[in-house]
Amino acid sequence: MKNNELFTRLTESALALGATRASVIETNLISLDPAFREMCASNACGTYGKCWMCPPDVGNIEDLMKQVGSYRYALVYQTVSELEDSFDIEGMFEARKSVSQVAQKLRNTFSIPEISTVLHLTVGGCGVCEVCAKRTGEPCRAPELAMASLEAYGVNVSKLAEAAGMKYINGKDTVTYFGAVLFCTDGGSVDEE
Ligand code: SF4
Image (cartoon, rainbow, N blue to C red; front, side, top):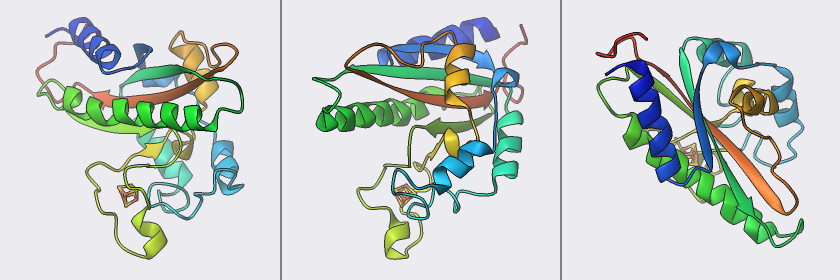
C-alpha cells in the first residue's frame, strides 16, 4: 500500500469513528514548547501529579519532545461539539468523553502491519479510569490503554491545528478537542511516496 492510500484510509477511519475533521501531517510540522509543561504545573485542570499519564509522572519534557520527533507522521483529528451555551459544563464533559472514545477506537485502526510504531496522544489527562490509580497509590491499571495529553508532550495545539488545516476554535457555543496519533511506516511494508 502506498503512503497516500494509507493516509486516506487512516483519515477516513477517524471520520467514521466520530472525528469532525482529520488529516495526516509530517511531524516536522509539529511545534513543540516546554512552556506547555509549565501550564500543566499550574494545575488548572486539577490532575497535575494525580494521574500516571500527567506531569510530572508522564516523564521528563525534553525526553517526551524528543519522542515526538522520533515519529515521522501524525494523524491529527478534532471533534467539534455543540454546547447549549458557554456554561454548558455537562456538554463539555460529553464532548471530552467523545474525543476520548475516538482516541481509543483509533487503536484498532493503527493495529495493522503497515504501521510499525505508534504513539496516541489526546486531550487533557488519561481519562480511562474514573479515578486514576495514581490517586490511590497503585500502579496503572491499563497501561495498554493509558494516554497522555498533547500538552504533556509539549505540543502547541493551536499551531498543530493550523498545520493540519483546521480551526482551533469553531464558533460560538461549540467546544473543539484535538487528538493525534504519531506513527512510522518504515518498519512495515508501505512503499514511500
Ligand atoms: S489507565 Fe487508569 S490508572 Fe492508568 S493512567 Fe489512565 S486513568 Fe490512570
